[in-house]
Length: 459
Image 1: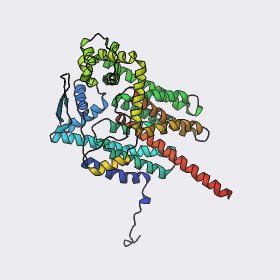
Image 2: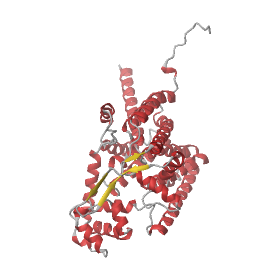
Image 3: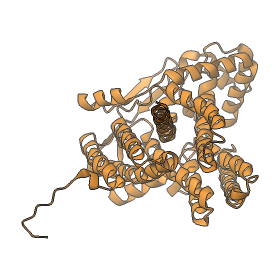
Image 4: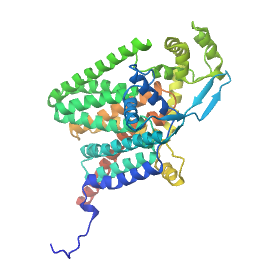
């Protein structure tokens, strides 16, 4: 080729992955350096948990994965110093301190490094999200489109900028789903071990993922009855039991330290917050041995965070109290579940506004959708899977069924076992929802084209 001949670059010559990263990487850099890091009330607890682990103790409220991540970065770049931003005194005289800021150059370096790591992991996960989309849609254009939409949605949500577990949990969910799907499809030991690793990673990142080995075990047992998948199903059943055993060992060690068989005391704190969220608490529910805790409950104006209640009164007393409240009025208990479900459905998928620029906030408001839409799509797919059982390949139906299992399990945990932070708790469902949406749109488009082709042929 003569040197005088000019080469014209065309975006169409880029590979699908290159097209995705050509947009996702610049957006990530813009958000990382313009928005920076965002400190929340919970951020400090992960650094405190790292100190507990260094002292050879399990942290009472945080499982070890995220504390180890933030602790390793802190060990490299310096110690983070949290600044007390405000104090609130309740009517009962209790003082609550909030640490929503950090100070010093080392602190900023640690925070930016952690945010940078979260963006890098997220960008890596986009490759596997695209591959999952291709498995379902068998369309390059649709897979690129839904991956870009998902990338823009997550980047503009600001979730990668927050020092919380949500960003890593999104990416790890994609890694786990891809590994499990491949382990079923290929039966490879490598993918089985990968699925096992990401199961443990997610559970010890956030205990709300405890449903994962239950889902893999249930699906594995179902697939034992299909000759084609019997071998891979058996391997995943074994992997599920390994994950469960690891969790039981951790819970046993936790019980030795804190007297409660659970991965964290956060479950008891959440149980308390959910039980006492109803102001009409029956008096008979307060008949517990701890006089101080009974007095605290009756003085509803002094209602405080569950973590402090557990710390002040002990896990057994708080757990007994919450159980007594729920058992004393079962009708109200189920009404509260339905009330939380209704609140979740009208909640929005994004609540991570940076509060720094009007442009980003405007785009964020345009991207958000109500979580009720996600639940509607999940319920729709329950029907569609039965409708497609003879017209779609077995592998696709298995993938869709597993996505539904994970999504519904996360909804159950968020509604029944946690306080009203549904947008945050259900963030891990976002990649699953986008995969289902892509599959649904592609099926509808193909059906429309087929119908048009038939009408044309009949004319």
